[in-house]
Image (cartoon, rainbow, N blue to C red):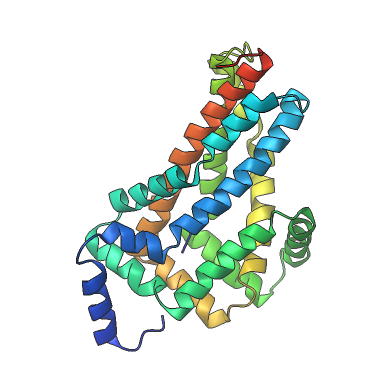
Amino acid sequence: MRLRRLATGLAALLMQASTAFADLPEEELARVLRVDEVASILRDEGLRYGVELEADMLGGGGGRYFQDRVAALYDADAMSEALTAALVQTLDTAQMRAVVDFFDTDEGQRILTLENAGRVAMADPAVEGLARATYQDLAGSDDPHLADVERFVDINDLIERNVTSGLESNYHFFRGLADGGGTRMGEDEILSEVWAQADGLRADTTSWIYGFLLMAYQPLSGDALQSYSDFSATSTGQALNQALFNGFDQIYNDISYKLGLAVAQAMNGSDI
């Protein structure tokens, strides 16, 4: 999923920005956006997914090789570096300042705290189920919180971007599985299999994202969430959104391909 003002005055903001970007802007940006914390959450998610993958595709018999491979692939430091690099490659200096200005505030940090805590909470199947059920109960209604979340989702194109990212990740997994000899599927068969997942993935993504955001942003006032959406609609907010998706796509496409290879090698009893 993606990351995202109450300053004491314009002078404080300008002083903060000039100090923050005097040396290494990428370090300040990563600190404000709590990239290391996000990477740690992604690692925990990845390790849990590795357990599920081993059970589903290897009958729980992946062995030490597969478990070590999963742990190595979901490297928090490497993921943090990739996300930071994507931010630096996409945002110019003025946009970096604007991102810091928005998020290095009580309100901005509260948003990130809620997002990260919500993502951790969704790891619990009971919490995830409740969040999805809440969305299903509200879908199609005139609930004001739902309307605020819908605007945020639309501005950031969260459904289609996540579906596209998910399909790409699945493609890279099958490609790795095939290259490792775990399946004889050719390119056309892989593409057909991936596209066949699109409708189900879209429905699942919609339910997860809305359930997650409705839960995570519940403590925010309507004005705070509207302010966040307004920032997201700016050129800087859109560039930040693109940078985060770029970073996540790079991370997960690479990991997915190597996971496919690892599954294939475990199937073949390889110790490579």
